[in-house]
Length: 283
Image (spheres, rainbow, N blue to C red):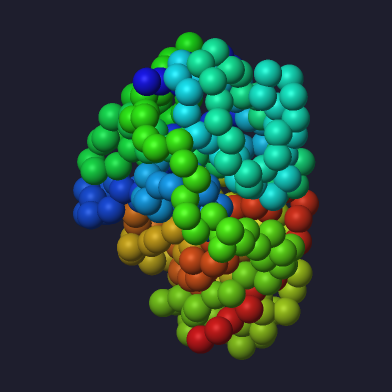
């Protein structure tokens, strides 16, 4: 059983919860940017939370199904059709052999997720199906390729009525953070400014990192490379802020001033260029 990629869309990829245990070799975690939405998609088709899903960014793919199967599309808001007919997000539905699913545009937020009953069964590399070049052959979907899946029960999960997708969480501009290892090296004035200033998402945002348009005075001396994680906020020599995301490197040489909470990483993953955010230190 498989799904054929008729059109790959923009930055579409197969992702699971990530690749762990290989940071010592410089291998990024990768995995879905918005774990909340991806887990919700899996639950809606009766999967375990860790099954691989398809992550879509802004413009989705066209997919042709080679077998009848239960699927769902989860996101804040998107234009999606099955054989030209509009479909609802968050509502599992059966597709037949030959059906084509088209996600034309994500109209609110940045990312959406397609889950398929049984999960996508692409090849595992280092204990994960998450696409990340050069660990995998490609960084995302390729036109004409087929993605295998295992045919599972077509019945909706018994707890479907109890599943609630909280869209309101993504409206928040607040990114909760912990103080980073180099926080105490900042001046008191800069510490205050970083916690009260509204920040603007730069055009330079990706699965690797989000940059901020505003700049801050930085007189800190350089430092040796240290471990970093998804959610680490770095202050560069020119005063720019870089917020590392799922595909980030495992070490970095810039001061680590904040660490985003898991919730905040997911909120940020649905922000786009020009959106406003602010840091709220919780420790």
